[in-house]
Each structure stands twice: as structure tokens, then as C-alpha cells.
Amino acid sequence: MLIKNEFQVAAPIDKVWQFFGDIPRVAACLPGTELTDDLGNDKYEGKVAVRMGPVRLRFAGKADITERDEAARRIVVNATGAEEKGRGQAALVITATLQQAGRGTRVGVTQDLQLAGAAAQYGRGMISDVTAVLMRDFSANMAARIDAAERGETPAQASTASPAGGFTLGLRAAILALQRVFRRFFLPYRTNPT
Figure (tube, one colour):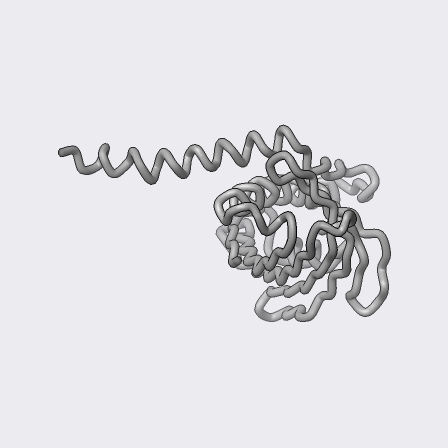
């Protein structure tokens, strides 16, 4: 399943690219993500916890930066993991690209996600909605950390990402789903009355 998200950061592209070079800081911005070990050579072990509907999924696995293109401002990460209770597996290829956008930076994130087991029972819409909420939180956390670094604060002083909470995350994803349904079914009648 291919999921695309885009967001803007008010910092210049060089600062955002420098931030993306520090994978532990990047991971700390994504709710529910924890790096547990730096294996060297751009390889990491970690955990990801997220709630999909009534089920909380906790994956443990590895991430490997397979491409880092300074000129194109593009980074590619391969990640694989297994659900800790043996309820499934996930494989993910994340591609992040940066582009100058006025005085800030536009960040495009493409995720090629393959799920097996319990997580695979959820539809594309729900997974896309949860991902959109996580990307919004990620972008806000990243902007806050870049601003904190500009003020001279250490990463420990900057705010940490909140866990991918069940009720709040589910509620925000449900609101996105309702908005999508509203646009799909009601807006055509508004623009083309019969």
C-alpha cells in the first residue's frame, strides 16, 4: 500500500536536511517510535507502537538507511518488524524528499507499507487516516525541535514526542474519515445541484 503525505516546515532546507541526518532525533519526533540500538552503518533497532481501532500493535524490528542523496535532498529507509505478540509482520520503505518552499521547506514522505497478520485486516482508509495524523504530529514535533536547536536548547530540553495514544489518535483518524466521506458524498450535490 502506497501512502503519500506532505507538510511544510518554516526552517530553511539546509537546516531541515541537517536534522534528517540525525536519525535518533528524527525517530523521537514520530509518536510511538523508540530507537533501542544504533547498530552502526546507518542501521538501527527499534520499536513502534500504534493503535488501530481497538487493537494496540507493537512492532520490534530494524531500520536501514539505504539511500542518502545530498544533492537531491532525498533519504530512503527500509524497515521491517514483527508484532511483539506474534500477530503479524510489517515491511516499510519510507522515502523523504525536501524542496525549498519560499523561506521554508516542503517535506514529501512516501511510505510503501506491506502488512501481514492482525494489522492487515484494517482497510486502506483507516491506515491512511492514522498515518496522516502521525505525520501531522511528526511535522509539529520536528518543527519544535528545530526551533529549540535554534534557541540553543539541547535535544533533552526539547519536547519529546508523545506516544501514539489510542483514544486521541483514533478520534483524530475518525474525524479524517468522516471528512473524507463528507467530501465524497455531499460535495458533488453542493457543486452540481439537481
